[in-house]
Image (cartoon, rainbow, N blue to C red):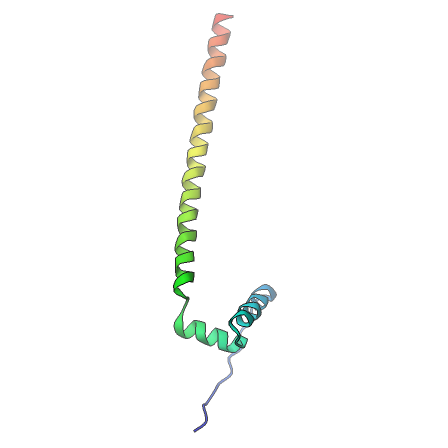
Length: 90
């Protein structure tokens, strides 16, 4: 008995298409097979771990940015106070 197939067409950006071609080539399969496998089995354990790590990196970057902004505000406040004191003693 022959396997029945149906055609599915979708639009994508040229960059995404190039990525699909590259990833399928790395996996040694056609683009169609690559998409089928990804849809059927989902992302690999490594990809899931990488996504989790990327999310942690985003959070850490936000915390670092917030800390840096607070440090700058504190430094500006100290400089302002030092300038004020310098004017008072001059």
